[in-house]
Every structure is written in structure tokens, then in C-alpha cells.
Length: 284
Ligand code: AMP
Image 1 (cartoon, rainbow, N blue to C red):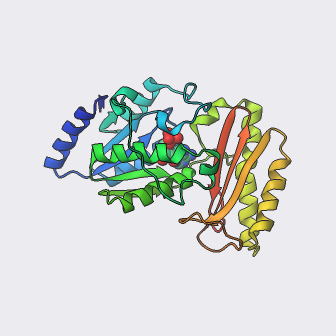
Image 2: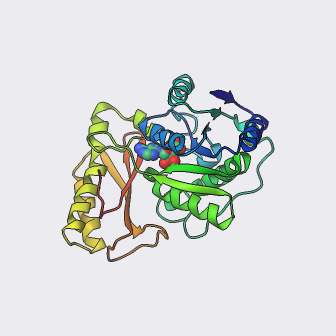
């Protein structure tokens, strides 16, 4: 595996891959890798000749007062994991490398950016889309793998790639969970043992909602209030929102149908956690 920090070094490798006509799989991350990330990396490895992972804690997607300075990091462990999986190129740029000049350009994806998570974090998705656009341009044509765990992010990036004609195929991968249902997240590192247990209320409420939908309940209001009740019962968890939307457009719906998605966010101790489900599939 080659570990590089400069955009020009990525270009050198990409140029070699292109000569060999290799297909390239790209997995952008913020590091502190867990099995959610490694599932994306393994899939990218299985489906492509060469696999590139990026680790970059992108300041643009954090607002004032969020956890940019305390975001968990363990680069040595991340490097060993990438090596063990057989990643070909690991790109770990500094902020100065990614934003050598003050950045004046930003990517906006109308309608998808300001709802749900974007309503709580108004600058977040523009920061995500802008850095992902840069990574897509640095790497060039590739298959790019993103987790369904960040459902709205996946819709934002798929739409951006389509609208701006990137030669990138965006592929969504299922959420990897602990056996108790808790979605793996780097931010779970902020949780105490007790909070970790309490945090299972998120996936549990989504599973109960899914069972009710599969049993025939289609009223979004009814399902929402069941989720609110389930989460409110857990004293250590403070629900921020529960939204039921059409999965791709993210438009709020009153009646649940195939293609719907339920998304929630909650504070547990210092961590702000998100989760989502296709109610006709449930938490697996
Ligand atoms: P992050 O490092 O949190 O920016 O995540 C990097 C990529 O891994 C994103 O595409 C996430 O959606 C994905 N990811 C994070 N957690 C999980 C998980 N539990 N299951 C599947 N993918 C995940």
C-alpha cells in the first residue's frame, strides 16, 4: 500500500492505473475506521482493480461549536487496517493541501441540503459536497462507495454526481451495526458504557416502526409518534428529529409507501447520533 499526502502523488498513481486500464474504487472517510468503513473498503476491493481510501477530517463540513477539534483519530491503526484489507493507495491530505487558498467555491444541492439533517446543520452538506467534488476531481473516473448510514449524504452526493456529470458511479452500502442494533459510528467513541446501551433506542425504535409498517400501518404521524414514545422512554437519549420521507427526493410524506425512509437524530451524552431505515426492510 502507498500512503500519500499530496494531490500530485494521487495523480501519479491514477495516471499509472489509467495506463493499465484499471478500474478504481474510491472510499472517502474521516478516519477512525470501524467495520462500517471496512465493509465499504472490502466491497470496493472486490469490485475494482485498484482501491483508494481517503482520510480527511474536512473542516468545511463542521460548523462553529461542533466537534472538529475533538473528532476521534487513530491514524496508525487506520493505516494498518487499510494495509490488512489490501488497499492500494491511502490518501491522507492536510487541510493546507486540500484548501491551499481560501476556498471561494461551494457546491449546493437545492432541496436536498436544507431539510432533515441540513435543517439542524445548515452548512454541513455544502461542506460535504464540496470536499467530495474535490476528491472526485482529484481521483477522476471511479466507483465511489458511501454508507446508507448517512442516508441524506448518500442522496446529496448521488444527485451532485448526476447533476454535474462526474464520471463517478456512486454506490450505497448497507449500514453495519453492532449485534444490539447500534449503528457503528466513529462518534460512538464519545459514549460511556451506559450511554452506548441507551443509544440502542435509536435502532430499536426504527425496528419497531418497521414491524408496524410491515403489519400494515401507513400513517406517518402514527409511526412518528411511536418512535417518539420509544425514544422518550430512554432518559439518556434526547431526540432531535424523526422524519419520514420519500427516500430519494427526501420530500416529507404523510402516507408510507415502498421507497419511504425514516430518519432520526438524537443526542446521547456528548454524541449526536443519526440512524435511518427502509421500513419495508427493517434493521437487519
Ligand atoms: P465517515 O468517516 O463517518 O465520514 O464515514 C465514511 C463513510 O463510511 C461514509 O460513506 C459513511 O456513510 C460510511 N459509514 C459510516 N458508518 C457506517 C456504518 N455503520 N455502516 C456503513 N457505512 C458507514
